[in-house]
Image (spheres, rainbow, N blue to C red):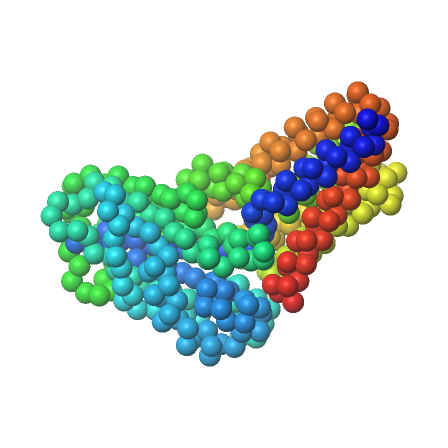
Length: 409
């Protein structure tokens, strides 16, 4: 069979396989989840971005024009939704919760005026919840999971990605544990009897220990943020398509590594600035732009193949990386709370390192496969792989672009 036919079959087969999978893209929401362990109950404060509220409560398809009064009227329902969505087990037995109180976060660094493009993403509601512990001996293990927004796809085949930054204390505000909780990755905490018994029993609906909860005393571990960065790439098919477009055009390993490192440097800059709340960009701009970069790079591979190794490609990788970084960092500042200094720096470094490891872990084998094909079949394989592979990437990018425009248009 001619090389051209083999290349087309392999690349289109890979594209069709990817298209058949659930395709998580960039709808990345991150909330805080604070828990106080008392003798007879767990009390917790959970944040939800107003975009999350709009999605869960079907308020205008989560666009940027949801009226504030509609969101306020839906907060009671969203509290009940959180009680159903959060999954807490004590020694393997599910706990049942109730809503104690809720409030709209109307001040602080994340404030954005109603009607602005940032309002739904930068504003939060706080929900105080209570989960009663079973009577008898104190539990030895607590498990925290969730299924928030798993029933509300971002677009056909693309789920929302919700991550909670979990921080657990006892009633005296001593740290017990911290972690990042995704729908596919719960967090388990082993409790020793002295820690649990030292906690005061619940005497009020919203205890003072929760009202004075200090978010920044402990952060999830370096490894947690490292895994978050890796997972965000491995399950982010929009990023993988962009990576594939770069790899298809890189003739040498040096060219490919330069592109990846340039892209990493750029997105690390904006991840840091966005996580520290120094730079903001609305989701209606970031998400379609990221999808558009996939289409742009893929089409350039086809129409101007001689430019793909030029210095202009490095400049493009840097410029596009700056915007990709805004997508990586959406919600990351929420998990950092009021922490400062070394803790924030380690979290940002771990996340960016995880993203880079994800890029290399996927990109190097993919580029190596292309290199093996070039070695075996020469320029015929190289030219057709660039043409047909880029066409497949462009179609995938167009799909994500349509999904983003549908969601935010």
